[in-house]
Image 1 (cartoon, rainbow, N blue to C red):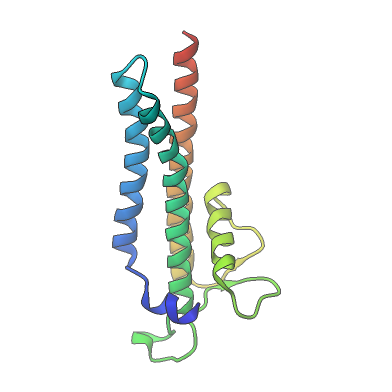
Image 2: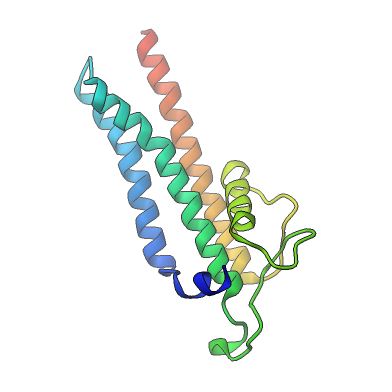
Length: 155
């Protein structure tokens, strides 16, 4: 986990671009589908609906990878300290694995808050804040879209 997390992070800018693209495509596909057709094609409807949870999964999975990268990056200026930067304290866990980062990411994504994991560094707090804010707005848009679709079906 450590080796993979250290070398396979694409950077926050690329992660943000991929995440925003996934979110935009998933929400945009729903809006486009329902604004153009009174009776949408079954395949197009299924793909549009499937894109919403897939966009949601993409957002939190990419965030988990970035949390792992930030955690396992060497500390100190320019990586001079061979010790991990850390930044998260997982209870009863000496060496966090991928599931720990997925757990943390999905908890932040579902609740816009942290649970039993402590955030210990400013870079990790910054990432957690950004993730929580993006998740909050994504979840809000999805909820508003669902209410709008239900209201449109009843009228």
